[in-house]
Image (cartoon, rainbow over all chains, first blue to last red; front, side):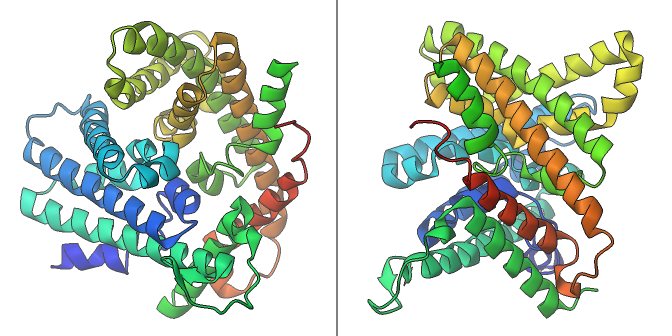
Length: 193
Length: 192
């Protein structure tokens, strides 16, 4: 159970470990994009964690990283094809950031630190926890940016028509600044140094 | 002229780090001192230029020629990983001094999403060979520029009294946000 909970808050991949920043900043212009990216990453994390932890004793140490990369990128290809077939609009909005899950440091990091050393069950829990922690962070950031940009959350009008849209929130600068404020808030709440 | 615009766009107006959020991990992590940032930047530029040249050829003459584009990601990541390995071996053997300086940064480049991002963008925009090479080189230069500027600012910041919750990551992200704003001033340099 500990393996699962850890990723959600105490070692949250985005707010605490500061990993996987590229997709975090790039795709969170809206809530729905954040959710899709979070789920896609969780799927790759869990699937590759399962495979790697089951074959961990067969992999020679020297080609370990290369093997991880092949396994991870195969699953990313699967996700990309699924997205293209079933939700083409989201797939085209995420653009090259969907395939870039391959180089998401969270995934390789978890394989190296956890899945390649632990039994299948624990790796599964760890991957699920980290994936959901990542997805949560993306949802929060996506929600905040979408709300401030056009006053909606997930497409629903939250602020009235008086709300003037803040264009900066969909721009790169807005992404950096809102994540910065969220990280600061997170540190304040969790009371770390 | 078109080639020149590709270069200017990728260095300034569409900087990989500040516009596409590629290569953020090393940008936030390594950039504490100027020299290290510069070394990392040069090593990455080198790998990026080579990656652009090699992946363009592989994509055009193998993947597209045989209709196996779905192998794109697996192939690209393998090419990048082996390229980094080769560069490392080459440097260690023939240019040991340079290896001493760049050595520690090289393995990190494999998981730098900017390198894979470069290959993906190149395919997406259907660049020809020369355009790809310039794109790769420019992306590296833009990355170096952002890294060096960031290192300079962080050097100054280390002596400031920053509010507690902002220490570390948060302040770095805030600085990056302001930098991104500043770089928006360059938009318009390149006709779209």
